[in-house]
Image (cartoon, rainbow, N blue to C red; front, side, top):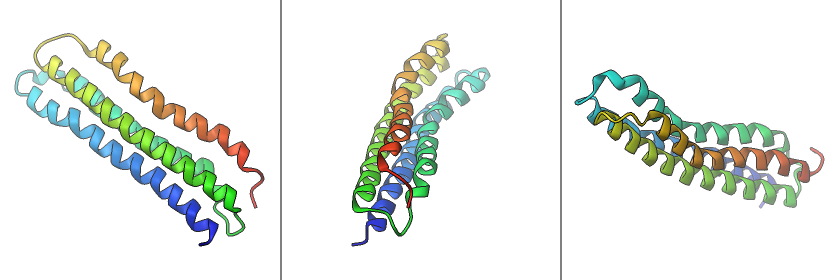
Length: 152
């Protein structure tokens, strides 16, 4: 198998898993928002912010693709391709679980706001914890990219 195919598989995992993660992650608070609007329609802006938050992990996978795309050349070495595969799995799975858990936190916040509790700020703070790990994947890929060596 050509190394370029291994690298492309890593990129596919990176972008696809983080995108799937975001689509599932935003669906939890979106579903909660639909139910919460029955009780508290005036908090739609808060529901919208909490619903959009888990969608950022999909962007992180896309950013990491841009950090690595110049290495996707026919002259890529086996080690570079394996490293890109590893980074793709790393970013994809971390963003997958980060977004799902963040979506659950945001959904609970939406439900509480719908019941009249003033928890928007607290929910944002708590939802930032899983977000941090998605951000760390971008930082790790940025740093690990320098270990890949020169672009062929």
